[in-house]
Length: 550
Image 1 (cartoon, rainbow, N blue to C red):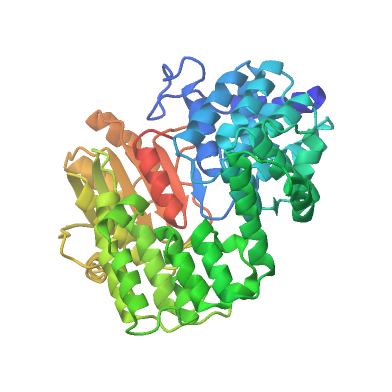
Image 2 (spheres, helix red, strand yellow):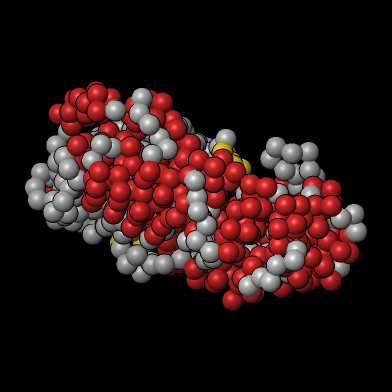
Protein backbone atom coordinates (compact mmCIF):
# COMPACT_ATOMS: atom_id res chain seq x y z
CA UNK A 1 0.00 0.00 0.00
CA UNK A 2 2.81 2.41 0.88
CA UNK A 3 4.43 1.82 -2.52
CA UNK A 4 1.16 2.64 -4.26
CA UNK A 5 0.75 5.84 -2.25
CA UNK A 6 4.31 6.88 -3.16
CA UNK A 7 3.45 6.40 -6.82
CA UNK A 8 0.34 8.55 -6.44
CA UNK A 9 2.18 11.19 -4.42
CA UNK A 10 4.77 11.59 -7.18
CA UNK A 11 1.87 12.31 -9.54
CA UNK A 12 0.51 14.79 -7.00
CA UNK A 13 3.86 16.57 -6.83
CA UNK A 14 3.98 16.91 -10.62
CA UNK A 15 0.44 18.27 -10.51
CA UNK A 16 1.16 20.73 -7.70
CA UNK A 17 4.40 22.01 -9.28
CA UNK A 18 2.28 23.63 -11.98
CA UNK A 19 0.00 25.40 -9.51
CA UNK A 20 0.40 28.06 -6.87
CA UNK A 21 -1.39 28.42 -3.55
CA UNK A 22 -3.66 31.41 -4.07
CA UNK A 23 -6.22 33.39 -2.18
CA UNK A 24 -9.62 34.36 -3.56
CA UNK A 25 -9.24 36.13 -6.84
CA UNK A 26 -6.19 34.07 -7.72
CA UNK A 27 -3.73 36.29 -5.89
CA UNK A 28 -0.88 34.65 -3.91
CA UNK A 29 -1.12 35.32 -0.20
CA UNK A 30 -2.39 34.12 3.15
CA UNK A 31 -4.76 31.16 3.37
CA UNK A 32 -8.14 31.08 5.12
CA UNK A 33 -7.47 27.85 7.00
CA UNK A 34 -4.42 27.38 9.22
CA UNK A 35 -4.39 23.64 8.49
CA UNK A 36 -4.62 23.65 4.69
CA UNK A 37 -3.70 25.99 1.84
CA UNK A 38 -6.61 27.97 0.43
CA UNK A 39 -6.50 26.23 -2.95
CA UNK A 40 -6.02 22.81 -1.35
CA UNK A 41 -9.12 23.36 0.76
CA UNK A 42 -11.02 24.71 -2.25
CA UNK A 43 -10.14 21.70 -4.39
CA UNK A 44 -11.10 19.31 -1.60
CA UNK A 45 -14.46 21.03 -1.14
CA UNK A 46 -15.15 21.02 -4.88
CA UNK A 47 -14.60 17.27 -4.92
CA UNK A 48 -16.78 16.69 -1.86
CA UNK A 49 -19.54 18.81 -3.36
CA UNK A 50 -19.74 17.55 -6.94
CA UNK A 51 -16.98 14.99 -7.55
CA UNK A 52 -14.18 16.98 -9.20
CA UNK A 53 -11.26 18.94 -7.76
CA UNK A 54 -11.45 21.19 -10.82
CA UNK A 55 -13.67 24.27 -11.25
CA UNK A 56 -16.16 22.50 -13.55
CA UNK A 57 -19.44 20.85 -12.59
CA UNK A 58 -20.89 18.47 -15.17
CA UNK A 59 -24.44 17.15 -14.95
CA UNK A 60 -23.09 13.78 -16.08
CA UNK A 61 -22.15 11.59 -13.11
CA UNK A 62 -18.33 11.49 -12.75
CA UNK A 63 -16.31 8.30 -12.52
CA UNK A 64 -14.33 8.31 -9.28
CA UNK A 65 -10.78 7.04 -9.03
CA UNK A 66 -7.54 7.78 -7.20
CA UNK A 67 -6.65 10.28 -9.94
CA UNK A 68 -9.75 12.27 -8.93
CA UNK A 69 -8.34 13.08 -5.49
CA UNK A 70 -4.73 14.16 -6.03
CA UNK A 71 -5.04 17.09 -3.64
CA UNK A 72 -6.67 14.93 -0.98
CA UNK A 73 -3.81 12.44 -1.17
CA UNK A 74 -1.24 15.22 -0.91
CA UNK A 75 -3.00 16.48 2.23
CA UNK A 76 -2.89 12.97 3.70
CA UNK A 77 0.82 12.64 2.95
CA UNK A 78 1.40 16.06 4.55
CA UNK A 79 -0.04 14.79 7.83
CA UNK A 80 -3.44 16.51 7.52
CA UNK A 81 -5.45 13.27 7.52
CA UNK A 82 -7.57 13.93 10.62
CA UNK A 83 -8.33 17.47 9.41
CA UNK A 84 -9.40 16.10 6.03
CA UNK A 85 -11.72 13.56 7.68
CA UNK A 86 -13.25 16.28 9.84
CA UNK A 87 -13.86 18.40 6.72
CA UNK A 88 -15.50 15.43 5.00
CA UNK A 89 -17.71 14.77 8.02
CA UNK A 90 -18.68 18.42 8.44
CA UNK A 91 -19.33 18.83 4.73
CA UNK A 92 -21.72 15.88 4.74
CA UNK A 93 -23.55 16.97 7.87
CA UNK A 94 -24.01 20.54 6.60
CA UNK A 95 -25.73 19.28 3.46
CA UNK A 96 -23.36 21.05 1.06
CA UNK A 97 -22.75 18.02 -1.15
CA UNK A 98 -25.01 17.64 -4.20
CA UNK A 99 -23.73 14.09 -4.71
CA UNK A 100 -23.14 11.64 -1.87
CA UNK A 101 -20.60 9.36 -3.56
CA UNK A 102 -17.63 11.77 -3.68
CA UNK A 103 -17.58 12.20 0.12
CA UNK A 104 -17.92 8.43 0.58
CA UNK A 105 -15.06 7.84 -1.85
CA UNK A 106 -12.90 10.43 -0.07
CA UNK A 107 -13.65 8.77 3.27
CA UNK A 108 -12.72 5.38 1.79
CA UNK A 109 -9.38 6.80 0.63
CA UNK A 110 -8.71 8.15 4.13
CA UNK A 111 -9.60 4.79 5.66
CA UNK A 112 -7.02 3.08 3.42
CA UNK A 113 -4.17 5.42 4.38
CA UNK A 114 -1.24 4.12 6.40
CA UNK A 115 -1.59 6.65 9.23
CA UNK A 116 -3.50 4.92 12.09
CA UNK A 117 -5.09 8.15 13.38
CA UNK A 118 -6.46 9.01 9.91
CA UNK A 119 -7.90 5.51 9.51
CA UNK A 120 -9.52 5.60 12.95
CA UNK A 121 -11.02 9.05 12.30
CA UNK A 122 -12.40 7.85 8.95
CA UNK A 123 -14.06 4.81 10.49
CA UNK A 124 -15.56 6.93 13.30
CA UNK A 125 -17.05 9.30 10.71
CA UNK A 126 -18.72 6.48 8.78
CA UNK A 127 -22.00 6.53 10.69
CA UNK A 128 -22.21 10.34 10.32
CA UNK A 129 -21.96 10.13 6.52
CA UNK A 130 -23.88 6.92 5.80
CA UNK A 131 -27.50 7.61 6.69
CA UNK A 132 -28.84 4.98 4.28
CA UNK A 133 -27.83 1.39 3.50
CA UNK A 134 -27.16 2.41 -0.12
CA UNK A 135 -24.49 4.81 1.12
CA UNK A 136 -22.92 2.16 3.34
CA UNK A 137 -22.84 -0.28 0.42
CA UNK A 138 -21.24 2.39 -1.80
CA UNK A 139 -18.53 3.04 0.80
CA UNK A 140 -17.73 -0.68 1.05
CA UNK A 141 -17.53 -0.99 -2.73
CA UNK A 142 -15.15 2.00 -2.91
CA UNK A 143 -13.02 0.28 -0.28
CA UNK A 144 -12.95 -2.86 -2.41
CA UNK A 145 -11.92 -0.94 -5.54
CA UNK A 146 -9.17 0.89 -3.64
CA UNK A 147 -7.97 -2.37 -2.10
CA UNK A 148 -7.60 -3.92 -5.57
CA UNK A 149 -5.48 -0.94 -6.70
CA UNK A 150 -3.40 -0.74 -3.54
CA UNK A 151 -2.91 -4.48 -3.09
CA UNK A 152 -3.80 -4.23 0.60
CA UNK A 153 -6.25 -5.82 2.99
CA UNK A 154 -9.81 -4.65 3.49
CA UNK A 155 -11.75 -6.36 6.26
CA UNK A 156 -9.45 -5.47 9.11
CA UNK A 157 -10.55 -4.78 12.66
CA UNK A 158 -11.24 -1.09 11.95
CA UNK A 159 -13.71 -1.73 9.13
CA UNK A 160 -15.37 -4.60 10.97
CA UNK A 161 -15.97 -2.39 14.00
CA UNK A 162 -17.19 0.55 11.88
CA UNK A 163 -19.74 -1.59 10.05
CA UNK A 164 -20.91 -3.26 13.27
CA UNK A 165 -21.24 0.17 14.90
CA UNK A 166 -23.33 1.41 11.96
CA UNK A 167 -25.94 -1.30 12.56
CA UNK A 168 -25.79 -1.13 16.35
CA UNK A 169 -26.16 2.67 16.47
CA UNK A 170 -29.49 2.62 14.60
CA UNK A 171 -32.89 2.86 16.22
CA UNK A 172 -34.34 -0.67 15.81
CA UNK A 173 -37.48 0.39 13.92
CA UNK A 174 -35.48 2.73 11.66
CA UNK A 175 -33.06 -0.11 10.95
CA UNK A 176 -35.93 -2.51 10.21
CA UNK A 177 -37.35 0.02 7.73
CA UNK A 178 -33.93 0.53 6.13
CA UNK A 179 -33.01 -3.13 5.63
CA UNK A 180 -36.41 -3.98 4.14
CA UNK A 181 -36.37 -0.99 1.76
CA UNK A 182 -32.80 -1.41 0.49
CA UNK A 183 -31.60 -5.01 0.69
CA UNK A 184 -28.60 -4.80 -1.62
CA UNK A 185 -26.71 -2.31 -3.78
CA UNK A 186 -23.36 -2.04 -5.57
CA UNK A 187 -22.80 -5.78 -5.34
CA UNK A 188 -23.22 -5.94 -1.54
CA UNK A 189 -26.05 -7.04 0.74
CA UNK A 190 -26.77 -6.72 4.45
CA UNK A 191 -26.08 -10.42 4.77
CA UNK A 192 -22.59 -9.90 3.33
CA UNK A 193 -21.80 -7.04 5.70
CA UNK A 194 -23.05 -8.79 8.83
CA UNK A 195 -21.08 -11.92 7.95
CA UNK A 196 -17.83 -10.10 7.16
CA UNK A 197 -18.00 -7.68 10.10
CA UNK A 198 -18.72 -10.43 12.67
CA UNK A 199 -21.25 -8.03 14.15
CA UNK A 200 -22.38 -8.70 17.72
CA UNK A 201 -25.81 -7.10 18.29
CA UNK A 202 -25.90 -4.37 20.93
CA UNK A 203 -29.43 -5.24 22.10
CA UNK A 204 -32.24 -7.72 21.63
CA UNK A 205 -34.08 -5.75 18.96
CA UNK A 206 -30.93 -5.43 16.80
CA UNK A 207 -30.29 -9.16 17.35
CA UNK A 208 -33.77 -9.85 15.97
CA UNK A 209 -33.04 -7.81 12.82
CA UNK A 210 -29.69 -9.57 12.50
CA UNK A 211 -31.43 -12.95 12.56
CA UNK A 212 -34.06 -11.75 10.07
CA UNK A 213 -31.30 -10.70 7.63
CA UNK A 214 -29.14 -13.79 7.99
CA UNK A 215 -31.71 -16.55 8.62
CA UNK A 216 -35.00 -15.25 7.23
CA UNK A 217 -38.50 -14.65 8.57
CA UNK A 218 -39.39 -18.29 9.25
CA UNK A 219 -36.40 -18.69 11.56
CA UNK A 220 -37.39 -15.48 13.36
CA UNK A 221 -40.93 -16.76 13.89
CA UNK A 222 -39.67 -20.00 15.39
CA UNK A 223 -37.11 -18.26 17.63
CA UNK A 224 -39.47 -15.60 19.04
CA UNK A 225 -42.86 -17.34 19.02
CA UNK A 226 -42.86 -18.53 22.64
CA UNK A 227 -40.55 -15.92 24.18
CA UNK A 228 -41.52 -13.11 26.49
CA UNK A 229 -40.28 -10.23 24.35
CA UNK A 230 -39.46 -6.63 25.27
CA UNK A 231 -41.48 -3.72 23.91
CA UNK A 232 -38.80 -2.86 21.32
CA UNK A 233 -38.65 -6.46 20.11
CA UNK A 234 -42.45 -6.62 19.79
CA UNK A 235 -42.45 -3.41 17.71
CA UNK A 236 -39.81 -4.78 15.34
CA UNK A 237 -41.55 -8.17 15.10
CA UNK A 238 -44.86 -6.47 14.27
CA UNK A 239 -43.23 -4.31 11.60
CA UNK A 240 -41.34 -7.19 9.95
CA UNK A 241 -44.50 -9.30 9.99
CA UNK A 242 -46.33 -6.54 8.11
CA UNK A 243 -43.57 -6.38 5.48
CA UNK A 244 -43.64 -10.17 5.06
CA UNK A 245 -47.43 -10.25 4.76
CA UNK A 246 -47.37 -7.77 1.86
CA UNK A 247 -44.94 -10.08 0.03
CA UNK A 248 -47.34 -13.00 0.06
CA UNK A 249 -50.80 -11.45 0.20
CA UNK A 250 -53.07 -11.39 -2.85
CA UNK A 251 -55.69 -9.47 -0.89
CA UNK A 252 -55.53 -5.87 -2.06
CA UNK A 253 -57.45 -4.57 0.96
CA UNK A 254 -55.06 -6.32 3.36
CA UNK A 255 -52.05 -4.77 1.59
CA UNK A 256 -53.65 -1.32 1.76
CA UNK A 257 -54.37 -1.78 5.46
CA UNK A 258 -50.74 -2.78 6.11
CA UNK A 259 -49.41 0.22 4.15
CA UNK A 260 -51.59 2.64 6.11
CA UNK A 261 -51.03 1.09 9.54
CA UNK A 262 -47.26 0.65 9.27
CA UNK A 263 -46.44 3.42 6.78
CA UNK A 264 -44.86 0.99 4.37
CA UNK A 265 -43.24 2.45 1.27
CA UNK A 266 -43.20 1.61 -2.41
CA UNK A 267 -39.86 -0.24 -2.22
CA UNK A 268 -41.35 -2.74 0.26
CA UNK A 269 -44.28 -3.72 -1.95
CA UNK A 270 -44.39 -6.33 -4.71
CA UNK A 271 -44.51 -4.99 -8.27
CA UNK A 272 -47.94 -6.46 -9.05
CA UNK A 273 -49.49 -4.46 -6.18
CA UNK A 274 -48.09 -1.25 -7.69
CA UNK A 275 -50.57 -1.63 -10.55
CA UNK A 276 -53.43 -0.97 -8.16
CA UNK A 277 -55.05 2.47 -7.96
CA UNK A 278 -56.09 1.86 -4.37
CA UNK A 279 -52.55 0.93 -3.31
CA UNK A 280 -51.23 4.19 -4.79
CA UNK A 281 -53.96 6.11 -2.94
CA UNK A 282 -52.72 4.51 0.28
CA UNK A 283 -49.15 5.62 -0.46
CA UNK A 284 -50.33 9.17 -1.17
CA UNK A 285 -51.35 9.81 2.43
CA UNK A 286 -47.75 9.89 3.74
CA UNK A 287 -45.80 10.43 0.52
CA UNK A 288 -43.34 13.37 0.72
CA UNK A 289 -44.08 16.16 -1.75
CA UNK A 290 -40.88 15.61 -3.78
CA UNK A 291 -41.79 11.93 -4.24
CA UNK A 292 -45.36 12.85 -5.15
CA UNK A 293 -44.10 15.12 -7.94
CA UNK A 294 -41.90 12.31 -9.29
CA UNK A 295 -44.84 9.89 -9.46
CA UNK A 296 -47.52 12.25 -10.86
CA UNK A 297 -47.20 10.75 -14.35
CA UNK A 298 -47.37 7.16 -13.10
CA UNK A 299 -50.45 7.84 -10.99
CA UNK A 300 -52.17 9.70 -13.84
CA UNK A 301 -51.37 6.81 -16.22
CA UNK A 302 -52.82 4.33 -13.70
CA UNK A 303 -56.05 6.40 -13.45
CA UNK A 304 -55.48 7.31 -9.80
CA UNK A 305 -56.09 10.89 -10.91
CA UNK A 306 -59.19 10.57 -13.07
CA UNK A 307 -60.31 13.89 -14.64
CA UNK A 308 -62.60 15.84 -12.34
CA UNK A 309 -62.24 13.35 -9.47
CA UNK A 310 -61.91 14.07 -5.76
CA UNK A 311 -58.38 12.61 -5.97
CA UNK A 312 -57.33 15.32 -8.43
CA UNK A 313 -58.81 18.00 -6.19
CA UNK A 314 -56.98 16.55 -3.15
CA UNK A 315 -53.60 16.31 -4.88
CA UNK A 316 -53.95 19.85 -6.27
CA UNK A 317 -54.68 21.16 -2.79
CA UNK A 318 -51.62 19.38 -1.45
CA UNK A 319 -49.32 20.64 -4.24
CA UNK A 320 -50.44 24.20 -3.50
CA UNK A 321 -50.29 23.92 0.28
CA UNK A 322 -47.96 26.62 1.57
CA UNK A 323 -46.88 24.63 4.64
CA UNK A 324 -46.09 21.52 2.58
CA UNK A 325 -44.12 23.56 0.05
CA UNK A 326 -42.12 25.26 2.76
CA UNK A 327 -41.38 21.94 4.47
CA UNK A 328 -40.24 20.40 1.16
CA UNK A 329 -37.64 23.18 0.64
CA UNK A 330 -38.09 22.66 -3.10
CA UNK A 331 -36.49 25.23 -5.41
CA UNK A 332 -38.67 26.78 -8.16
CA UNK A 333 -36.41 25.14 -10.76
CA UNK A 334 -37.24 21.69 -9.30
CA UNK A 335 -40.96 22.48 -9.54
CA UNK A 336 -40.48 23.61 -13.14
CA UNK A 337 -38.73 20.34 -14.04
CA UNK A 338 -41.59 18.36 -12.45
CA UNK A 339 -44.11 20.45 -14.40
CA UNK A 340 -42.37 19.95 -17.74
CA UNK A 341 -41.94 16.22 -17.13
CA UNK A 342 -45.64 15.91 -16.33
CA UNK A 343 -46.78 18.06 -19.28
CA UNK A 344 -44.73 15.90 -21.67
CA UNK A 345 -47.18 13.01 -21.10
CA UNK A 346 -44.65 10.17 -21.23
CA UNK A 347 -41.62 8.88 -19.36
CA UNK A 348 -38.03 9.53 -20.44
CA UNK A 349 -37.03 5.90 -20.90
CA UNK A 350 -40.15 3.90 -20.14
CA UNK A 351 -43.18 3.22 -22.33
CA UNK A 352 -45.42 4.85 -19.72
CA UNK A 353 -47.86 7.39 -21.19
CA UNK A 354 -50.55 9.60 -19.68
CA UNK A 355 -52.87 12.46 -20.50
CA UNK A 356 -51.78 15.46 -18.36
CA UNK A 357 -54.54 16.87 -16.17
CA UNK A 358 -55.08 20.61 -16.64
CA UNK A 359 -55.91 21.17 -12.96
CA UNK A 360 -52.67 19.47 -11.83
CA UNK A 361 -50.65 21.61 -14.28
CA UNK A 362 -52.34 24.72 -12.88
CA UNK A 363 -51.50 23.63 -9.33
CA UNK A 364 -47.85 23.08 -10.32
CA UNK A 365 -47.70 26.56 -11.85
CA UNK A 366 -48.98 28.00 -8.57
CA UNK A 367 -46.42 25.97 -6.58
CA UNK A 368 -43.63 27.26 -8.82
CA UNK A 369 -44.18 30.85 -7.68
CA UNK A 370 -44.87 29.86 -4.08
CA UNK A 371 -41.46 28.15 -3.89
CA UNK A 372 -39.68 31.46 -4.47
CA UNK A 373 -40.13 31.83 -0.70
CA UNK A 374 -37.89 28.76 -0.24
CA UNK A 375 -34.90 30.45 -1.85
CA UNK A 376 -32.42 31.87 0.64
CA UNK A 377 -31.09 35.29 -0.36
CA UNK A 378 -27.30 35.54 -0.40
CA UNK A 379 -27.13 39.32 0.06
CA UNK A 380 -24.72 39.56 -2.89
CA UNK A 381 -24.83 41.98 -5.84
CA UNK A 382 -25.62 40.03 -9.03
CA UNK A 383 -25.35 40.59 -12.76
CA UNK A 384 -27.19 37.77 -14.55
CA UNK A 385 -26.32 37.69 -18.25
CA UNK A 386 -27.88 35.63 -21.02
CA UNK A 387 -26.02 35.06 -24.29
CA UNK A 388 -28.51 35.38 -27.18
CA UNK A 389 -25.93 35.15 -29.99
CA UNK A 390 -27.23 31.68 -30.87
CA UNK A 391 -30.48 29.82 -30.41
CA UNK A 392 -31.32 28.76 -26.88
CA UNK A 393 -34.07 26.38 -27.98
CA UNK A 394 -32.03 23.20 -27.40
CA UNK A 395 -32.68 21.22 -24.23
CA UNK A 396 -30.32 22.01 -21.36
CA UNK A 397 -28.23 18.93 -20.61
CA UNK A 398 -29.30 17.17 -17.42
CA UNK A 399 -32.86 18.50 -17.54
CA UNK A 400 -36.04 18.46 -19.61
CA UNK A 401 -36.32 22.21 -20.27
CA UNK A 402 -34.83 24.39 -22.98
CA UNK A 403 -31.67 26.43 -22.39
CA UNK A 404 -33.77 29.59 -22.70
CA UNK A 405 -36.22 28.40 -20.03
CA UNK A 406 -33.42 27.46 -17.61
CA UNK A 407 -31.85 30.91 -18.03
CA UNK A 408 -35.26 32.59 -17.64
CA UNK A 409 -36.10 30.77 -14.40
CA UNK A 410 -32.74 31.55 -12.80
CA UNK A 411 -33.07 35.20 -13.85
CA UNK A 412 -36.52 35.32 -12.25
CA UNK A 413 -35.37 33.66 -9.02
CA UNK A 414 -32.36 35.92 -8.53
CA UNK A 415 -34.17 39.19 -9.34
CA UNK A 416 -36.99 38.31 -6.95
CA UNK A 417 -34.83 37.09 -4.04
CA UNK A 418 -31.77 39.38 -4.17
CA UNK A 419 -31.99 43.10 -3.41
CA UNK A 420 -29.35 44.08 -5.98
CA UNK A 421 -29.62 42.17 -9.26
CA UNK A 422 -29.40 43.26 -12.90
CA UNK A 423 -30.29 41.06 -15.84
CA UNK A 424 -28.51 41.56 -19.18
CA UNK A 425 -28.87 40.01 -22.61
CA UNK A 426 -25.81 40.14 -24.84
CA UNK A 427 -24.29 39.15 -28.14
CA UNK A 428 -21.23 40.43 -30.02
CA UNK A 429 -20.92 44.18 -29.44
CA UNK A 430 -24.37 44.45 -27.85
CA UNK A 431 -25.30 44.46 -24.15
CA UNK A 432 -28.86 45.34 -23.13
CA UNK A 433 -30.14 45.62 -19.54
CA UNK A 434 -33.70 44.36 -19.16
CA UNK A 435 -36.28 44.71 -16.39
CA UNK A 436 -38.19 41.68 -15.10
CA UNK A 437 -41.28 42.21 -12.96
CA UNK A 438 -42.55 39.77 -10.35
CA UNK A 439 -45.81 39.38 -12.30
CA UNK A 440 -44.14 37.99 -15.42
CA UNK A 441 -44.56 34.30 -16.33
CA UNK A 442 -41.73 32.03 -17.41
CA UNK A 443 -42.88 32.35 -21.04
CA UNK A 444 -42.90 36.14 -20.83
CA UNK A 445 -39.42 36.26 -19.31
CA UNK A 446 -38.12 33.82 -21.92
CA UNK A 447 -39.51 36.03 -24.70
CA UNK A 448 -37.90 39.09 -23.11
CA UNK A 449 -34.50 37.39 -23.06
CA UNK A 450 -34.35 36.71 -26.81
CA UNK A 451 -35.32 40.11 -28.22
CA UNK A 452 -31.97 41.50 -29.34
CA UNK A 453 -30.28 40.46 -32.63
CA UNK A 454 -28.04 37.43 -32.98
CA UNK A 455 -24.27 37.72 -33.33
CA UNK A 456 -21.11 36.03 -32.10
CA UNK A 457 -20.58 34.95 -28.51
CA UNK A 458 -18.40 37.10 -26.26
CA UNK A 459 -18.75 36.02 -22.64
CA UNK A 460 -16.52 38.85 -21.44
CA UNK A 461 -19.09 41.50 -22.47
CA UNK A 462 -21.12 41.53 -19.19
CA UNK A 463 -17.91 42.03 -17.18
CA UNK A 464 -16.67 44.76 -19.52
CA UNK A 465 -20.10 46.45 -19.30
CA UNK A 466 -19.94 46.46 -15.49
CA UNK A 467 -16.37 47.78 -15.59
CA UNK A 468 -17.19 50.62 -17.97
CA UNK A 469 -20.28 51.61 -15.97
CA UNK A 470 -18.36 51.12 -12.69
CA UNK A 471 -21.16 48.99 -11.32
CA UNK A 472 -20.16 47.07 -8.16
CA UNK A 473 -20.82 43.35 -8.71
CA UNK A 474 -20.15 40.42 -6.38
CA UNK A 475 -21.30 37.68 -8.76
CA UNK A 476 -21.38 37.50 -12.56
CA UNK A 477 -23.69 34.66 -13.62
CA UNK A 478 -23.50 34.01 -17.37
CA UNK A 479 -25.76 31.67 -19.35
CA UNK A 480 -24.68 30.57 -22.82
CA UNK A 481 -25.38 27.50 -24.95
CA UNK A 482 -22.07 25.85 -25.73
CA UNK A 483 -20.01 28.72 -27.09
CA UNK A 484 -17.46 30.80 -25.19
CA UNK A 485 -15.72 32.63 -28.02
CA UNK A 486 -13.40 35.29 -26.64
CA UNK A 487 -13.72 38.74 -28.17
CA UNK A 488 -11.77 41.69 -26.80
CA UNK A 489 -10.80 39.79 -23.65
CA UNK A 490 -10.88 36.35 -22.14
CA UNK A 491 -13.72 36.33 -19.50
CA UNK A 492 -11.29 35.12 -16.80
CA UNK A 493 -8.84 37.92 -17.61
CA UNK A 494 -11.67 40.45 -17.83
CA UNK A 495 -12.78 39.41 -14.33
CA UNK A 496 -9.29 39.86 -12.92
CA UNK A 497 -9.05 43.35 -14.46
CA UNK A 498 -12.49 44.20 -13.07
CA UNK A 499 -11.46 43.06 -9.58
CA UNK A 500 -8.35 45.20 -9.72
CA UNK A 501 -10.22 48.26 -10.93
CA UNK A 502 -13.18 47.98 -8.53
CA UNK A 503 -11.39 46.48 -5.51
CA UNK A 504 -14.01 43.70 -5.27
CA UNK A 505 -13.29 39.96 -5.12
CA UNK A 506 -16.03 39.28 -7.67
CA UNK A 507 -16.98 35.74 -8.67
CA UNK A 508 -17.73 34.39 -12.12
CA UNK A 509 -20.06 31.49 -12.97
CA UNK A 510 -20.38 30.48 -16.63
CA UNK A 511 -23.16 28.00 -17.44
CA UNK A 512 -22.73 26.23 -20.79
CA UNK A 513 -26.26 24.92 -20.91
CA UNK A 514 -25.87 22.52 -23.83
CA UNK A 515 -22.19 21.57 -23.61
CA UNK A 516 -20.31 18.71 -21.98
CA UNK A 517 -17.04 20.66 -21.87
CA UNK A 518 -16.22 24.21 -20.76
CA UNK A 519 -12.89 25.82 -19.89
CA UNK A 520 -13.50 29.44 -18.99
CA UNK A 521 -12.69 29.22 -15.28
CA UNK A 522 -9.07 29.52 -14.15
CA UNK A 523 -8.45 26.30 -12.18
CA UNK A 524 -6.23 28.20 -9.72
CA UNK A 525 -8.85 30.84 -8.96
CA UNK A 526 -11.36 30.08 -6.20
CA UNK A 527 -13.71 32.74 -7.57
CA UNK A 528 -14.48 31.06 -10.91
CA UNK A 529 -16.80 28.18 -11.74
CA UNK A 530 -17.93 26.47 -14.96
CA UNK A 531 -21.19 24.51 -15.21
CA UNK A 532 -21.83 22.09 -18.10
CA UNK A 533 -25.54 21.53 -18.61
CA UNK A 534 -28.04 22.57 -15.97
CA UNK A 535 -30.01 20.56 -13.40
CA UNK A 536 -31.38 21.02 -9.88
CA UNK A 537 -27.93 20.21 -8.46
CA UNK A 538 -26.43 23.14 -10.39
CA UNK A 539 -28.79 25.45 -8.50
CA UNK A 540 -27.37 24.28 -5.15
CA UNK A 541 -23.78 24.44 -6.42
CA UNK A 542 -24.21 28.07 -7.48
CA UNK A 543 -25.69 28.93 -4.08
CA UNK A 544 -22.83 27.21 -2.22
CA UNK A 545 -20.24 28.85 -4.48
CA UNK A 546 -21.66 32.33 -4.00
CA UNK A 547 -21.61 31.89 -0.20
CA UNK A 548 -17.97 30.64 -0.20
CA UNK A 549 -19.04 27.17 0.95
CA UNK A 550 -17.11 25.52 -1.88
